[in-house]
Length: 260
Image (tube, rainbow, N blue to C red; front, side, top):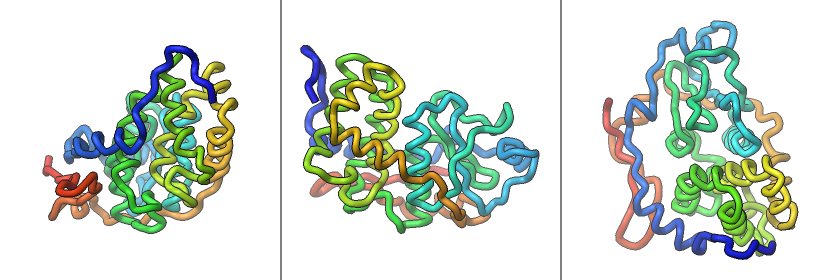
């Protein structure tokens, strides 16, 4: 894919992710895991029905673009969640404008793809969101995607080139033969890009990128089943810190819950 003159591009993915993962830290805050009443979650899931506390449901933002939809569908397909749904009523069931989707766990609402992915992975390790064992790169890509999906012009071309380079060796997905969190993160960016004429042309002009997009959009059309969760989410958030990535020798990234 030819980049326009003066285009901007990220450094190589490995270097980019190494620095990002060193700085990743997630705290258990009210803004991340929001306590809601049974009535509020029930209204958000449709019909005023009380939510099944053992059921995990992904809710898309009302203005979700193609990237958010594919990202949510891919996560649901990998982990066996029910297909994502749009909010069915105004109010507490709505997704915050700053987020592409949220996960409801009975009375709890998990906001933010990074924390959402870690919670799901902790409860159902297989199939994993990290097919080749590398957790650092996918987690860093989620941070990158939040900014990159809003890029336009030469900056957008640079972000798309970053993804294209990782697929240039013929791999089916970003971490090998199976889809994972890295693909879901990049879907946020590529999907946002194809919603514009310029971005769609860039994707169409990069065969590896176009083929990858077609593969991931074909996944997760119907993902039956539900994910079993404890009646309260607190047991998962208590106890020893959860190691979520190992960026390099002598260092590790941990998620240390802090009671709210």
